[in-house]
Image (cartoon, rainbow, N blue to C red; front, side, top):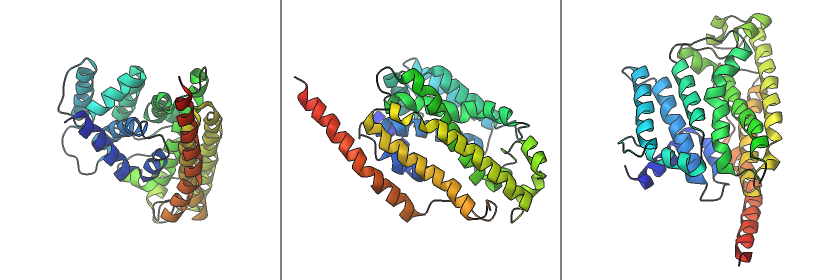
Length: 299
C-alpha cells in the first residue's frame, strides 16, 4: 500500500461512512483534507473491528494486531495495513499525541466487554477515549491561532463529545442490536424507562422524555464546543460551522419526529445538507483567498 493509496482509501472510507462529516471536510483547504481523512480512516477501521455485524474471529486479537502494527510504523517500520501509512504520517506531521491514540484504542477495547454505563460520568469516561481525543487529534490539523492551542483543547474535546452523543441518540436501536446501551442506566431509572423499551417498534412517552433530556445535554456540549471556533485559523472555521449544523441537524430531526429513534434512523435530508454546504462555501472561499494574498505578500 503506497502512501498515496493509503490516503485515498481513508478518503473513500470517510465519503462512504461519514457523509455529513465528509461534506464538511470539503470546505477545508485542499492540503488539510487528506489528514482529516486519515484520522477518520483510522478511527473507522478500529470501529469496524469492534462493531461490524459481519466480522468473524477474535475482535480483541484484531485490535491488538492493529495496535502492534501502529507501534511498528511509528518506529519507522513497514506494514501491509492499508490505513496506517496515512495515519502514521499525519501523526508525525502534526505532532499528534500518542496518548490520545492509546486512549482511543482503550475505549474501542471497552466496547468488547462493557455493554452498560451506570452514570453519565461513567459514559463520559468512555467517551473521553472514543470521542474527546478525536477532537484533540483533529485540533492541530485545523490550526489554532497563535497562542490559542491550549485554550482550544477543551472546545475540541467538547465537539467530540457532542458528535458522539448525537450518534448515540440516533443509533439507540442499532446499538441495542449489538447488545449495548449508551444511555446511562441512572437516567433510564429517573425517567422510568426499561432497557426493553429501547427495542420496541415505537418509543414510550417515558422514552421520549428521556431522549429530550439527552438532547438538551448534547446541546450543552455543542455550546461549549462553539466557543473554540473563533480560536481556529479562518480557513478552518467554515468546515466546523458546517459540521455543527449537519450534526446538530440530526438532533432537530429527532425532535421533529417526536423523539422517535426506534422507527427509523434520523438523518438530515440531502437537500438540507447541500444548502448548509453552499452557505459556508462562500466563507471558505473568501478565507482561502485571504490566505493566498498573505502568501503573495511574503518577500
